[in-house]
Amino acid sequence: MDIDQYATNFSEEPGYLDFARVGPIGTTVNEEQRALADILGRARFGTLESLDALDARVRDAVSTLTGFPTDQISFQPNTSQGLMHTMFGITGGVAISAAEYPSSTFAAVRAAESLGVLTPTWIETDEGRVTPGNLKAQLTKKVTAVVVSLVDFRTGYLADIEGIRQVIGDRLLILDAIQGFGIVDVPYGVADVVVSGGQKWARAGWGTGFLALSERALERLTPVFSGWTGSEFDGMPLDAVYPPAHTARAFTVSNPDPIAEGRLAVALEEIAEVGVTDIRNRILEKTSRIIDLADEFGIPITTSRDEAERAGIIVLEPDADQLTVLTAALYNHGVTVTTREGSIRLSAHVSTDEETFEMLRASFTSFASAVNV
Image (cartoon, rainbow, N blue to C red):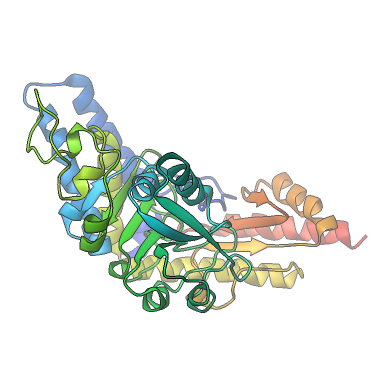
């Protein structure tokens, strides 16, 4: 399958530029979901066992894209739960920006409040961007882990995780990868914890995600929320409570949703077949067109213009008195975006079509007419 064939799998309505919020699922994921739901619905003799095999399948798919061994990967229903497992398992100081997505900050604070063994160290950023330079100056001996988003949800900034790894030494590097997983080809192996959901750029729908752990993370993290599926006993413990396993399985509570695992598995298998590099290049073409349109109409952009520093997100920041006008213009022309904190976030995928760009141009034209009256 090439990039053009991959793009035709999706059929979201024209005007959709909100993949950083949720990526509409495509034909392959839909068909997988229906097939698995049929198995569950009919429950023919011997068929339910096929659902059990989906856990290994999804971990194989995650392994292909991240490079982590399958036994160091566990399925998670979302990014937030994976981050909760991680934060509650840490002892020591955790360097984290208050500007990170709340999944990270809430997990850190809740763990600190509940167990008292984690201490958040709130770091300053360069307008939301965590860089090797600004991070290095703020690290102390008490910091044992660093949390960073692969792509910042507010600015669209693609973090230099190799540079961050170099400056933090042997501290744990925890990567919230959801805004870049599946569309940026990065060396995930430099991180100790990689957490992502599949509902955004992977386009696998809600209820899908994973937690990948390095050997160092497995040694240092305590599996606080470890249910019976995470025990070292290879099978269902019937009359005893066994210790947690020494694998990523320890960071599970119960059996996963096999249909969700199937959706994520097939979505990631497709991404691997097409190639993350080709997907990234196509998305960069789309986002460059958004930048060109914004420039044409004089709309300020806060996202980096350097392709090495961005993924699929473009952030517009019009003058405060023009924000409502631009938001209304986009709404009136059927363009779906996210507006928050004085900015407008547009995010494109490989399936963003010409009609969508025409709708975006019409929105900007209306905006320009309104503010130049």
